[in-house]
Image 1 (cartoon, one colour):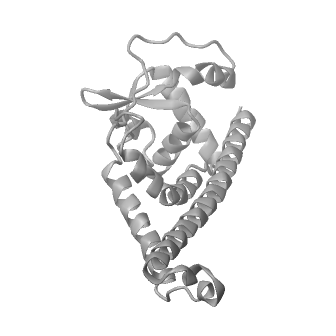
Image 2 (cartoon, helix red, strand yellow; image 1 turned 180 degrees about the vertical axis):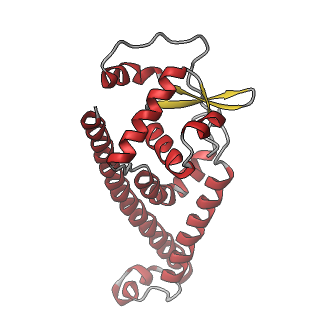
Length: 223
């Protein structure tokens, strides 16, 4: 059973690395296009002010000395803006704004910054569990599976090491095996319905019947 679990983790980590590499390539292309746009707009403005000699002869090789610092400042400003926006929207539900609208301009402007942060977000979902950690994670998912709806506050009694518990919960969440439901007294952990067959095969028995109301929540993880 631990072998299958280890293979599942390895497959997940490979997908994470590939996604991070694609985000890296996308970020590099986006920053390159953004810089080219800044240079093009600068040349266009200087051409209007100084005439056609700006884009001909040696004048083209002597761009204003402030161009590169200005481009760097714009890049840093977009990174700071996107970091603040991510922090503000961290626990907010997904927006229902229309697909087409003025917000597309902001999405395009912040695309290089978002792709840059996406690299870190992808790598942050890597799962590193040793043999003891895998055994504990399997024990945890078996416990959640047996309880059907497992209150988050009840896990401390069975798994007293809070740090290892959080690491196991994180691994099971990013692997797509467990989800959260908002309850009257906090949060309940449940198995994701899409992973029921995979988990049942992991434990070598039949898929348990779903309980009424056990639907994955779209709420963000408060941890």
